[in-house]
Length: 323
Image 1 (tube, rainbow, N blue to C red):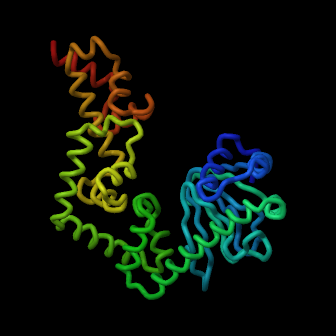
Image 2 (image 1 turned 120 degrees about the horizontal axis):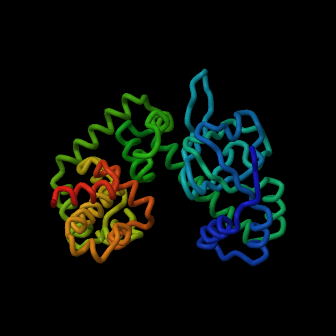
Image 3 (image 1 turned 180 degrees about the vertical axis):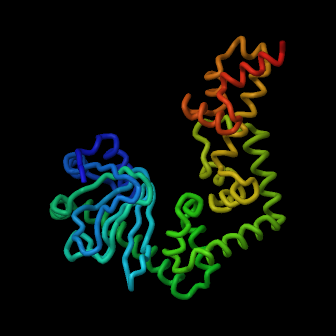
């Protein structure tokens, strides 16, 4: 593994997350800048093998990692963590004993890490480091206890609903066979329960009401023009949950939230591109910015995905048809 000194902006980001839990002293902040390292790994990279000692605590800047153990020749997923979560060996924390689980990349991932020796030094020097770690461990064990309980006593439907409620967006993002393994069920069972849940959503009159609210806010009120529009912001505005809205986008509209918003943006741009007067005053890129796209590449990728041709090709076709 190739570790290098973590970029300052990455450490600032971690400190902002930790600082929301407890105020961090300048001395501890300086230590984080000095001792944090970064690492990029490809999908399926084995970061730690079962039986090895884990030497680092990791923070997932981008990507997904899983814990995996082998029992009676069967691979069992013990946890899956994604962006903005901390990861290490659960059974072999701080490398005290060999790990009973491997740590494997589920996606291409960017990690920020700190070696156990450096962590122990910070624990010995700074009260705020000890307090932060205690809060994080307490939260982890609460989550782990709840997860273990529902997996042991809940039926397949209860386990599925627990997962999509506590981990919104995971089911759309992660390989389903890994999710099934973590929930202690066969893939066929997970697919059946998922299909039943989707069907119940489609038949729910409440879903129709939520669709009306979503369309009024995103389309009629033109919230799609907001560059940093997110599922969390819409959930807050509509007094809903990200899980409920994500389920509606995926099961009713048959697309992700991002695709739904980008389609509204592209429709708006297509209408403006058909307006000769508008195109005299604005470039295509300017229209994209006004319609909510944060970057040129994001706009071009979305346009090609939705329309099937590039913006320039579409505009050329419009010009030809008007002759």
